[in-house]
Image (cartoon, rainbow, N blue to C red; front, side, top):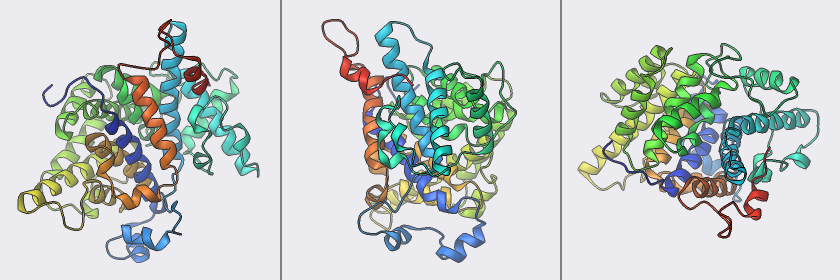
Length: 398
């Protein structure tokens, strides 16, 4: 494929996870609000960076992540744990079980939080960097995710995946599967990224519309992390999607997004023509449209003058377009942030947004470790070639 090579770019990994967290935090206050209500509350342009300035206490933290980012980071953390385990023992195959066990631990912590327990005491057990207090805030996953995880927990074998592609756990195609799949783009090949994204989503979402968008996202991210531009990455991801049954809904949604981005000025009304983002195909389509529209806007402005107007970053207009609509704004914002960050790195997003993100430190630390473990020089003891004990203790199995 032209436009990329096999080298994983750490700043793009960081941008991918950071963009997802920022998009989630921007969209969380808007989730399920009608566009008219958003404009009534925030003004005719909807939520903007000016809103953040007004909300900021001066100490940061105005942008707070939701369950979308918490589960996405648990996925990234589980990928590291699975890789460390495989290198330590010489056998693989445990990654999905580790991720499921992490999700179950997360859900139990959320239940304790609702019962009045902060849940901090067990947050770090088996979860590596996710002992960070910034990731311990209250959150609630969607019904499909919650019910699937409760079913898996009741079996009392947390490390054995219950929901699989071969034996779907339900018929859900909600956006909860795709929003946590971006880190799967660090896999060793585009094909592997697609399958890993699908299988991670299938832990809780059994319909093809619930897991095929996750594979498509992971495949696109795989190419972006290695230097591809967005259009090339999407082309490759759609080629992977074309090999799978049940793809028609996701294909139609993506095709509509690409066509829409190629014509006319972007607007919330055009976003809403793609759906509310409540299903996996719709959420991915909205994110793809917003990311492509932002790239087009940047190219047009660069042709006329330097990128020195209101927006100096492609992530600014992209994420605001992705969240200011009637629908699942935190999911569409997170996915758009994943794509833009994987394409452009951390500098794709306004500095104000980064400084106000409550979980920024934890996100960047995890991204750095994911890049290291996924790269050509993963931490190893030079005597034995295995991960050093410090790294194993940093990423114990869930």
